[in-house]
Image (tube, rainbow, N blue to C red):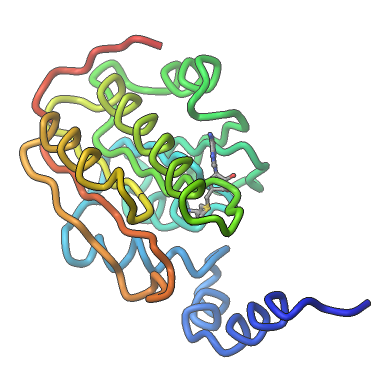
Length: 212
Ligand code: SAM
């Protein structure tokens, strides 16, 4: 079968990528693990005993990192549209995190106080058309913000992926209204060519408002 030029470029980049090699050596399911590890090293998000919700978790490398950091006294709840193979210490749900059924399934696993940290690495299937990819990413950021307002305890944190685009300023503003501090992170493991960024939202202002 003839391989397309972009598939060939992806393969070349994949086999020469140091993060791919490191992920394999460390037993992580994807190089994305290093994005969370790097942000956590700088910002100290993951704490022993914490309850962490991982939205858009497949194949599961962020959940692997989170489960190791929160330890046996913590809890990690992972959700994705795609299957995630079992991981020790992680409750795995297969559902749309933006749907009522998905939110209810997560809510049933949360402690009464709520989650300490919501992670969202959710990304749409990229079409290559920047405007539509940015718009669909913005919808996922909105969904993560709405979810966090119900699930996070007061003082909790949210780390959410978004693609740079015209919605950036509005989404940052919405986040700033709900959290004490909002910072932008672009970890080294996030490819320069990728428009992805992470908003790190710290210190949720309100108590949780559960509305599944
Ligand atoms: N953080 C993951 C890791 O470390 O393995 C990688 C996540 S991957 C970049 C993005 C994921 O978001 C995909 O698996 C996709 O299925 C998921 N996703 C996109 N929209 C979603 C939705 N509405 N509900 C649940 N998952 C979603």
